[in-house]
Length: 498
Picture 1: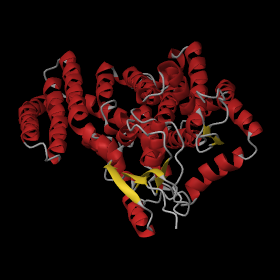
Picture 2: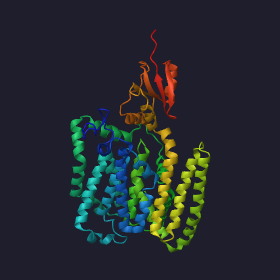
Picture 3: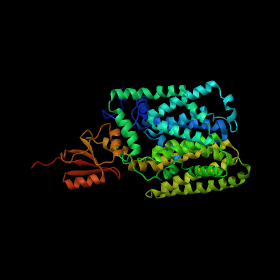
């Protein structure tokens, strides 16, 4: 898009590519034009969407529950593994989740959930007409943006969460406010033009995008992403780290309240259905990928923030948790220091890296607990930010360089690009799709699959399985750089004429 100026039809090396709608592509293309083609520019749209989602949800937490809950959310959500990982990813998952999160925050305003507890009955008098109209327009706009990010799943996820909220709260009349003509007009004005234009220019768009990449992806295992039904349980836990235990305990607390027949506030029910419905919906899917449940992470973090704010303001718990925080901070700090010392003494033992990072994350938990019970919100915020920066900096310096060499094709492409004859014929052979696409991106060319039958000379990026196939075929080659555990660079020599 940045090169051709065609902002309607997504293309992969000149061919129409309808796997996903264009919202991320638009953001990346604009970023490339402003900042040039580089990794940071490719990731910028996801980072912006993550920031918007975090600020919108913090505002929603602040409105009914106060500043303490909002501060906890600002700590828990941006520092969770799922948000950190996907906000760095040049992919459609975070734009989809971010736009859907802002849409759900606007829906909460329309449903009159942005007021303090106990104020829902009077919310109709308190919410101004202007605010209500803006919320309706924002709901339609951001839901339309989510549809432009990943397709009709946005409508299903938001509709399912609101439907079950209405079932449990019996507030059907409020739920139907989301079908207001202003919201519908805003939604269709945002989402519909691109779909109409793309379908007119590409007759097979509806079949490829709607039928194959939505219905078939959900109903059939055709795309080879089959996983067991319990797949999202560990994924959800990992995505919430290092705060997963807090979220689990907050969920257990809600279950206990339900069993004790306590009445949950409508806002808590809303956050709960918003968390659970994506998990339920994508558990039914025949194709499962980790990014599918990213929309469940923001509301889960919000539930954890509400639980922590309520728990830690209870006077009877203060002395116990203050002691726990005071003990955990130096213990895990010493563990982190020991792990770093061992790394520098024995750099060959890369497992120490993981231990050090784990210790730093636990150190963060200890410091947060300690500063929370000193009743100093500023100290809590500064300690949390400082420890988070320390963890991320340590990971960037110690962990990611090694992982980059192993997992990413970036180092392989950079190694190849410095060769004096790098403009020679280049191909890939039996390389996995992620590495193949990564090499395409970093080398700015579509690398073809090497044809053993043709056996043309040139460079080939080859997997271990592909290298064995080359040996068996008798094609003359020379092994060059071992780029990672997943790729080897070889040079195919010209075949001798008989």
